[in-house]
Image 1: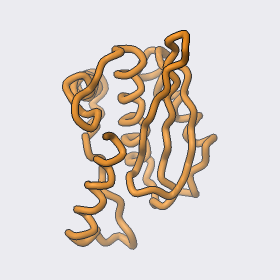
Image 2: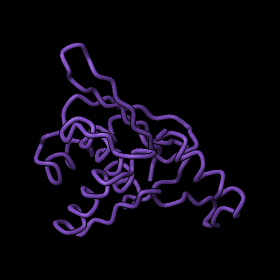
Image 3: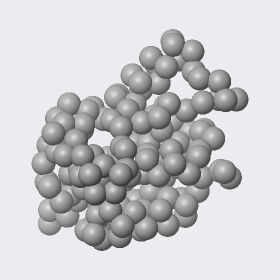
Image 4: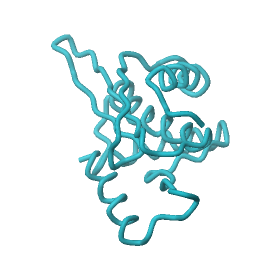
Length: 144
């Protein structure tokens, strides 16, 4: 797969929003950058109460379509919980409201969304245990 771009994320967001979230998700920005986590979600609330999400996707990963889909949907679940459910989703944003959406996607569409995401591979070799631990720690750090 070619290097991921903001347009790639936007088009997938639009497609997945229609397919899996009934076009309910609005007000989201997108960025790409090298980062520790595969994807990151943050949000801001305006004075009128509108929540604008921001999804970052890592450019330092050799993405497969399946893994990219999982990561984008994972970040979209964070946006759903924050902007539609308007709920706090526990430690690192992966509490009950988040898991409820994961179960819904699995039940209705057969999509498996993990809390941690698939770990990136470099040269088809899994990350060594020390780097894997650092990767997981960085992923959790972004959801604090």
